[in-house]
Length: 413
Image 1 (cartoon, rainbow, N blue to C red):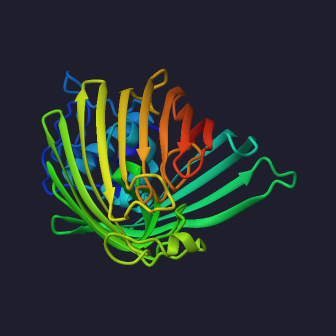
Image 2: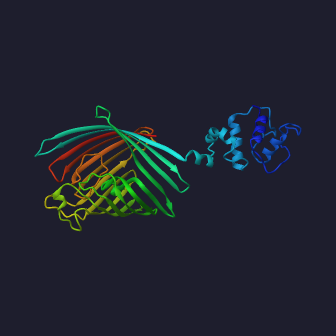
Image 3: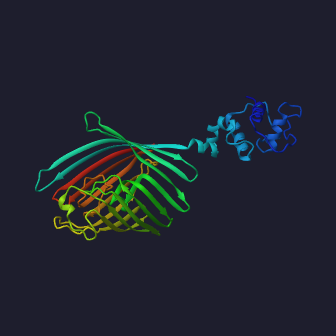
């Protein structure tokens, strides 16, 4: 299509200018049918001529050149984001790096992301007093995240999960709506309310979900508090509610943290545990203090966390109510950068009450355990990360030692 015809169509679709000036182009006479359109666009700074002062209206215009004109019209306010020209040249405008706020907000009103993880777990339990066991499992987990924009300050987030048990002959699977929460800000306080991801003490005390509300405040020095119900537990007691406060701060390369968490309303079927004497309160309350530190050495880090509960050391168990976790890391796989990799290792010494639902992929006892774990992760291709982990954990309640090999491939989109 000829250049002058395209510009006339652009004018008909709503491109206008506040000022009218004489035609600046030497090859476009006053009697030309596109004279008025071109003059208005030139006056608005939307179209430019060639260095010799010509317009060359008989030349065929490319879509890219037209998109440049539309981009200038947007910048000058000559057209709005809802104009037909913007919709027509949306692809070219995107390539030019032009952000169209109204269109973006409409397109991103509901954003869908997700990941698929295939995993294999091999567990060997050895014991001096009972028979040894060997088990394995394989699963395919798919997650879809839905983020809906409520306004400029609040979002709604939901997550749908499907897990296929690859060991089962009939392909057993289940689908759950596992996350549903609101997130936003009230002044300088970040608020998250509903069924949400939730982690305590870097996942060593609790790492799964919560039905409740969480408040976070601060930048260099961060404070947080929460109240709710722990929705997924491995502990012998099934706690009905919990609350806590925490704080952490970065001082150069050093990070310091501290927190207090209290679990209420637990019940269980173990009579010995139910009647155990506790230091403070009945057997269905568990209060946990924690302090931690981590130092970053560039691409490496070393950290330690200490925990202590209000549970007295029970006469029927020869283990502690304290916990110590030491962690070392080197680099780390970046899912957007193929070839990146990372290493980590941990020492665990956790007593009863210091673990409710642990973040590790290894098999462990909520009665307490001591041992170590190590892993490696690597980005095979963009958004494709493989991980290999090994754990050796001795049960503090019995003489069982659990050795776990975990492998996974996670694909994000």
